[in-house]
Image (cartoon, rainbow, N blue to C red):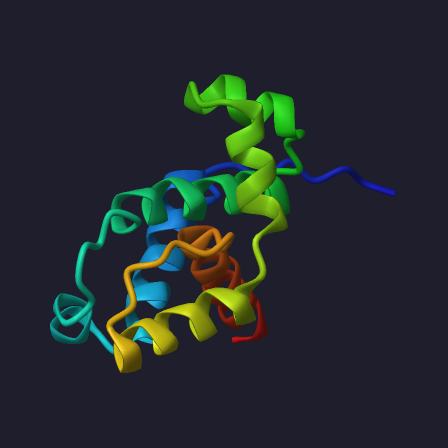
Amino acid sequence: MKEVTVTNINVPSAEEISMKVFNKAIEILGGPKKIITYKKLTWVASLFESALVIVLKEIFNKTTDEIAQELGIATTTVRNILRAEPEKAIEYLEKRMQEETTEEENVHIAGGLAKKAFEEIKRE
């Protein structure tokens, strides 16, 4: 059997893939204009972080510790993102929109959204 060496293959970086996940999460939420209606969006910045954590874990098979070290964040933060439940994040946001609640529940919104977006991209 002859070995074949392949060069010049364009493999997307973790950052490129995480941007797709981030954009999909924004789409899931209803787009940029819809996001503006959510008050106190302290979690939007962490959506970038969550998208990258999930991509590094799911595509690049990095461990929790490797991800934390690479991104310069706490291992606990990585674990919280990876344990986030997409359904609870969406449910929390919908509830917040209807009731204008400001109570913080134990929901990692960015992690849940990033996971849901990643799952949808995988299905596509």
